[in-house]
Length: 210
Image 1 (spheres, rainbow, N blue to C red):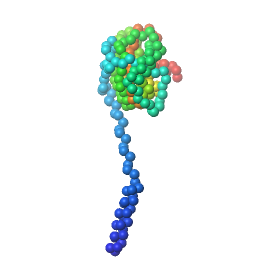
Image 2 (tube, one colour):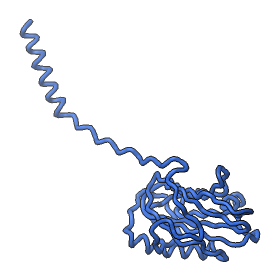
Image 3 (tube, rainbow, N blue to C red):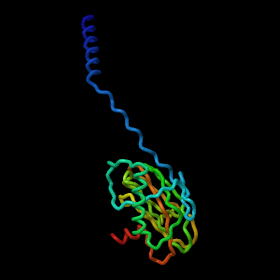
Image 4 (tube, helix red, strand yellow):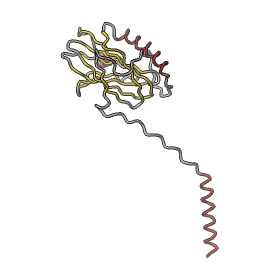
């Protein structure tokens, strides 16, 4: 009986040694994804006719989009050069006849971020907001809210959204940026013009195109 117990213990020790040698250490766990701030938090004042809210950069907008997640973050200098050309192109396309309201504002963003800006609408005028991110951030969405009322949104799978709205009285509205992928720099600029009936929201344009 003693011999059997000794043999069993010897086999158990040998089995544990070989089992320990054969098993690989568990892979490190991935860090948790960033948690976006709750709605109504992290506000930035992007008031038209006021100084820019964040460090100003001369920037521009893209002409093509990509949904690839294999992107490389640009340096600050590369991003500024890219965004400067891009915003100029977008202004020529979508802001003809509009007045500039304030300066271009820029902010560093990453996937999962939700940024909220306050923008002032003016009675009898229409607002247009152009946003764009560098190639390191391939997809962003913009929403324009009056309280809980959605005025416009651009959720196309690209990195150069535009939202618009016309106002019958002076009011402050919320511009919400949601970052879906990547990390890099984002710029935004506000434009306005008298309401001549020609300005359509992105939602109206998309609905008509269906």
